[in-house]
Length: 511
Image 1 (tube, rainbow, N blue to C red):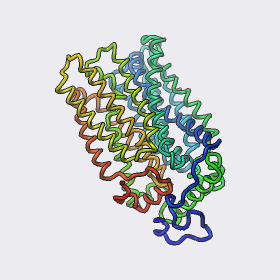
Image 2 (image 1 turned 120 degrees about the vertical axis):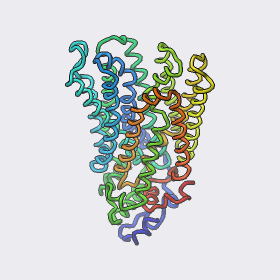
Image 3 (image 1 turned 45 degrees about the horizontal axis):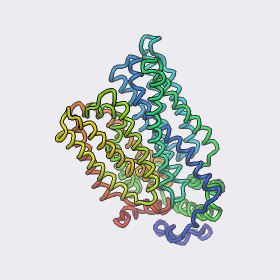
């Protein structure tokens, strides 16, 4: 193993099946087999991805709730903008902080804490004083509402950083992409669920009903309850347990989600890499390890750039401001609410196909196809809206809708799910929490900047926004082609060694 050669000979008293310079690609792990352990692994993934469902629902619910909220509480545009964006910027902090917490106390207890934050944030938002009975909002009620949104944002950001890591560390490498990718799929399911639930509540209660927005937000508490009680019965990450010297606990967990032969072989592999890490001087948690290792720093920069690129695909410009875009294209007010559901449906359908393809197509292939098709979609939208179909054209809104569906489908099919899977698997164990936290922090900051700027850009240049997106996505394509190493088909332990030693950055690693 490259790492073994870098640190010297191993102590023969610590030998394992992986301790003789044999990589996982040479030492064949026993194959995956059917049985109760496979069902148990599926249950763990289902419960954990309620964090992704909450992520999606809490970011999507404002799409339908913000107008009733602003009307009832008497908020102006700036005030409602602060309320909505508070969640996004808090999510950036949550991603960073919760990544470090997960490294210290474990993945499972961190996710349980996030479930409590989801519930408490929802309760604070729903009970914020203000409305017709008080005239409009009060300063205390406004502060309370923002506090609740910040709590939700911390939970959303934490879930975005911790849940993918938890799933990646539990998954066999053969199906790591599809298992980890379920979290991203649940995010878009949560967003679509928010759109549908909001529409049903509005239809049943009426748009002018006092407290309508409170009912919409209150639904967020239901999956938070399921996540809390479900995670109480779920296992800790076996890789985190080994890092903390709890090998027997790790063995007990692996035996519940693998066959006995496979569990023992994986445990030996994880123990081997963990032992070698501890032999490296300075290879400890946090930024110290990154600053002392150029390879780790480069990987962290690549991950951060990937997170920024994913946000500037334009997907959230549609998810946050879809109705504004549809109005700009020419749809009438009575149709906007209905056609706005289409991107959410396409996102879910694209997620289903992406899950199927995730362990069949290389990560780099996904990214190159995704950014290429997304850039082409943006170019076609700009040409169609600015040159071919002038304002007032009957075909203009429908052409826009079709091209938006193509864009969202390309992003969801090739990029969104693959990005979260990639971030969850690229970092070595001793910095996985901090690495995921930093990269997702940058991702959320890019998200927040986009959320703030899109309305102003649309007001200034209209559909010229899509030319800006096209340029950024072409740059992202070139960045992926030049710098991004491949990770599919390799165990986390193989990736760990290659990242730490810098082998992952060699040209061969991009094939």
